[in-house]
Length: 379
Ligand SMILES: Nc1ncnc2c1ncn2[C@@H]1O[C@H](COP(=O)(O)OP(=O)(O)O)[C@@H](O)[C@H]1O
Ligand SMILES: [Mg+2]
Image (tube, rainbow, N blue to C red; front, side):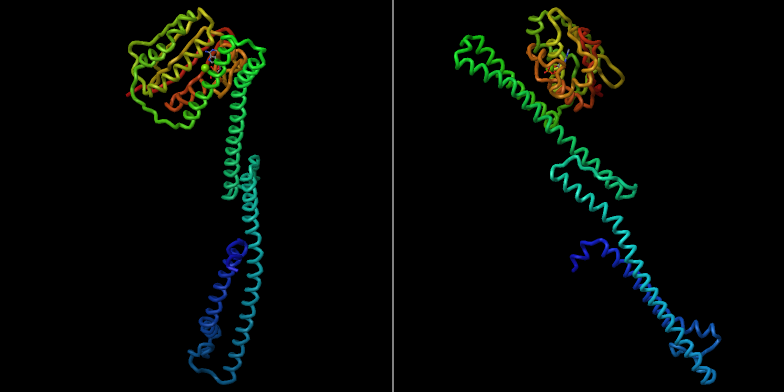
């Protein structure tokens, strides 16, 4: 029984109305009992001691009886009216509580069943927003929450799809080569083994990249931010590529103003960013090209750019470069020993973790590319 009251809003609203009505009736009843006789006497200009018996005995007997009868019938009709009013108020209370609870209960029921469906995995579920009261606001934020969940779910599915696709390609190549070797179709030459080894290496670096990406995106490492000289960052990066720069006969330039203040950065992480950008510049610039590293100060920020004279990027690809697994030309970057399209995603996550931003520019195909990121000036 108590459970029934607890679970049905309409009953609770009705009961609260009922309490108000009953208190009102009680007060009225008491009022008629204690104050109305006095008022009746004074308005009739009599001192007949009606009701409470406090009045003085005055006037003749017949008169007294007549007035007392009058008062009795007044009281009876008053009580009748009070009872009628009580009944009418009760009926209105039932109607109003039904109406009110329907206005509250119906949207709550809709929200309950929608959240149930979302819990069952139907992330497309939305509720209709009606009005701008608290319930309307609740419906609105419910929809927002549902949309976020749907986005996360889509991203998760996409990620799994992308990762399996990326893993499948080198795996298929390895498997194919091994089968060729076993069947004697492929010659057991050092080249064949090298090819298999290369694909295995690609798998390994993909897994490394993925691990790094998940760590970076989850912010699962502490940033050791302190003032660092830009030249230190650039030199550490360039050292890693010395052999490659020589082999590809790339002309290397750097333009770092002598009075450049130190930046606030986690040295290892920003070296990683520069490594990704510089590695791309080398990779996508043909032999004999140029790669330049620039740094300029803009107010409280230092902009660091890696500029190359390489193959460039068509304008329509620019907005997507930082999306994971995005490559302008999948087959090309594969042949060119390209990565999996995660390098720039990692770079962006790292730069943003430093409170900076990163962007790509290019004059178009064959016109070279420029990647620029910002860091805060120390002090
Ligand atoms: N300097 C560049 N010149 C031309 N294209 C570039 C350059 N840097 C990046 N790109 C394009 O952006 C894509 C994504 O880069 P990145 O995330 O580093 O992945 P990848 O592993 O392919 O290098 C590359 O596949 C390439 O198409
Ligand atoms: Mg790369």
